[in-house]
Image 1 (cartoon, rainbow, N blue to C red):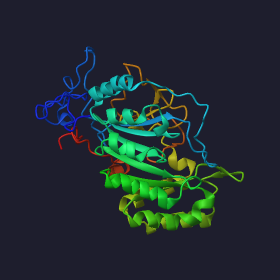
Image 2 (image 1 turned 45 degrees about the horizontal axis):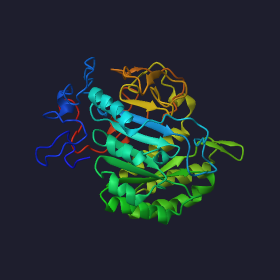
Image 3 (image 1 turned 90 degrees about the vertical axis):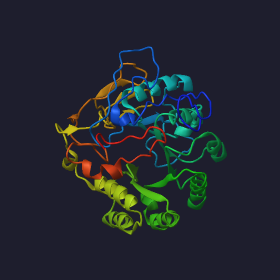
Length: 358
């Protein structure tokens, strides 16, 4: 990608592969018809989006296989099929989304997303027009990453797994990335029952280096008990203390949100029939390419990522499930106060997204 990030640059005289930037702030004016030249004329820009966070968030579970074998993992599935397309094919898809919705937030998850074929090239291409957030175990080649992936418009969330990595070595990798320009770095650790008493020291180590540290409640079975419901009162107190001791306000907000979700009763998460912006401002792409409104099992299918007619909702639609499985739902009237903390993303250097009339 060229340093100017546009489709063509009179300053450097280089023809770049990214979309041509329209004049002015396209998020504010919706001038996307000329943003990417396509033969298809049936598109119409579906922005600006009028609901916070104003930028569409795609949660892309790109593959379930992983190069680690954590004993507590409930996601890894080596046999799971996943959609493999080349970077040129993915470019067409993400250019189409750019034309429809402007600069989006693309969050990669898995499995381990960085072992997907040509992943580094894929990320570089997406960053031409969208922002990116990656949850990764940092097992990739750091030097190759630094050489090929721009440091702007991207957030890297390192997932620390104590069965495979030492906290101090993991922290060093994150700091190398930050020193090379990746300012939005963070770390997370699953609060597996045998880790609870170690979290305080690990959190303090990362926060001393000003690295956001996220504590994720364990969701699975340990010694025949289903978590997070099986955390003991003492474990809940210890995890709650981590929230209070955090010196990072964003970390405190995120970790409290996770703790509240883990401690919630089913009726506390019953939003059935309430208008929710999931499906309008957020969608989940599953590893086979299926796109659903949100992360809840069996929820509305919006289509397939390769479908040229795939569209998001244009307004909040009623929730269709009895007990929400999302830790940060978008129920209208309930999420807006924390949206700037829970749904923040990097700014794109060429295509910033602003609230309408901002």
